[in-house]
Structures are given as structure tokens and as C-alpha cells.
Image (cartoon, rainbow, N blue to C red; front, top):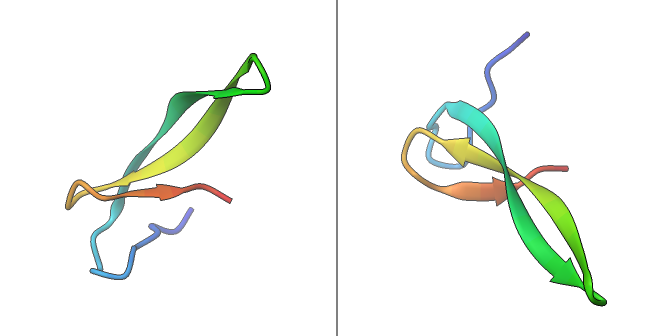
Length: 43
């Protein structure tokens, strides 16, 4: 498994899940947490 990097060349630390309310339902949205503290929505 290769390490993923963001635009700042920070390695991916882990994938976290954020709760988002959509149409009255709670959905979990995967976000990629990088070493520099930035978050990117996972594909």
C-alpha cells in the first residue's frame, strides 16, 4: 500500500468520518487527514 500525499506533500495520516446532516438524515462523510492538519474529502 502506497502512501498518499496532498498538494503540500504531507503524507496521509488517517481517514476520519464527519457526520453531515443531509435531508434530515445523518450521513458519514470520509475525510482524509494529512500530517500538516489539512483535510480533504475522500473519493
